[in-house]
Image (cartoon, rainbow, N blue to C red; front, side, top):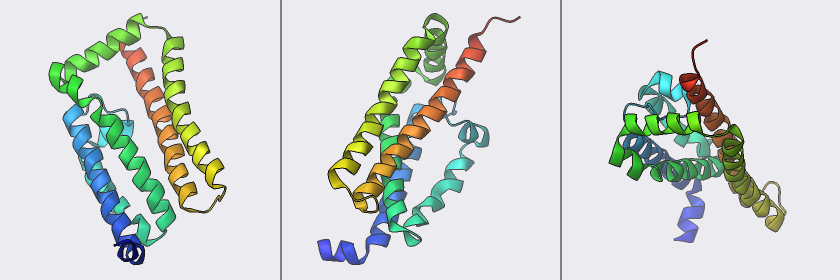
Length: 175
């Protein structure tokens, strides 16, 4: 089986990325069917058509299998992060969940948000660094997996901070 996977690695990675991207799309839909909670501003503006437009990312391994592995790690982490919000969003509803977040932003402190997002992101950066340090090869499979962790950390930091800023604007008193 291992020999078959090795000789068909590009196909296996393409299928795995398609499944991971599908899990990302499904988990996003389960949390936020109207995309009210979507942190990616472009995806929120484009709507569900954005999901369809991004499906060809599964073709990346045909151009570079290492980058394909990084994409796979990234989409698995994104889907996993989304799935953790499914229960709450489905229990209280998308709009109420958004109201809850707005209330937290209204009553909370920016410093607490900064600590939370920094800690979350730093754990994934640390995992990526650990992979690089243990393996030592900056161009091997482990390095590409580490890049997936770094990509996820950057995306979470970038999109979550923009989402937080959008929430702050929404709850700011009118001047």
